[in-house]
Image 1: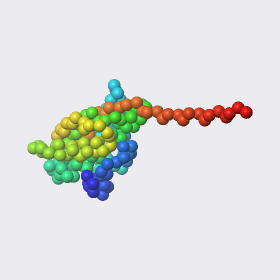
Image 2: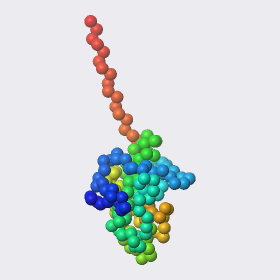
Image 3: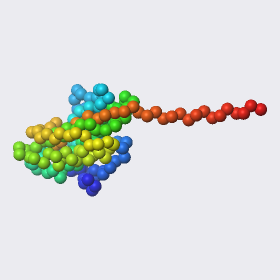
Image 4: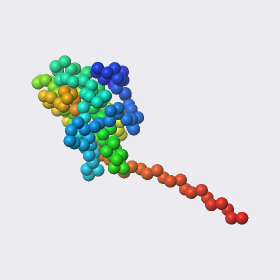
Amino acid sequence: MSGTDLPGTGTPVPDAPVPDARVPDAPVPAGDYAAARIAGGLVFTAGMTPRAGGGVIAAGVLGAGLTVEDAVPLAALAAGRAVEAAREAARSAGLRLESAVSMTVHLAVVPGFTEHSRVADGASARVRALLAGPPPARTAVGVAALPSGAPVEVTLVLSTEEEEEEEEAPPPPAPAAR
C-alpha cells in the first residue's frame, strides 16, 4: 500500500509500521460499550471504523461512488485502530498481543457488490504488518449501512501472552574485606 493516501486526507498509509506503532486518535467508544475486552486470554474488539480527528474520514457505500481502491486503505486504517484498542486492553492487563485469531470486515455495499475480499485484504495486510503470526481466519460481510456512514468496520479477536518482565541486573559484588 506504499504511496496510497487515505481518501480525502492526503495522509499516506504506512507499509509496515513498527510493532508498537501507535494509531492516531486511539479508539474511544461512541456509545455504551468497551473498545476492547479480554476474556479467556483473548482480546475481543468492538467494530472499528476509519476515523481520524474524531470523525469518520470517508463515508459512503462501495459500488455507489466509493471504489475498491478507495476502500482498501480505509479497511487498513480501521484494522489498525482495532489492533490499537486490543493492544491497550492487553497492556492494561499486563499482557501483550500474540496474534490475530479472527477478523470480521463489514462493508457498506450496494446490492450485487462482490469484491468484499479485495477490500478486506487491506485490513489483513495492516494486521499482518502490526502483529506476528499467521493470518487470522476472516469473514467479509456486505451490509446496507454502518455507523456514521462509514464504508468499512473491522472487528478482531486476538490471542495474548504474559508480558515478559525485564530481568533485574544482579547486585554489584560486595567490596572485598580488608
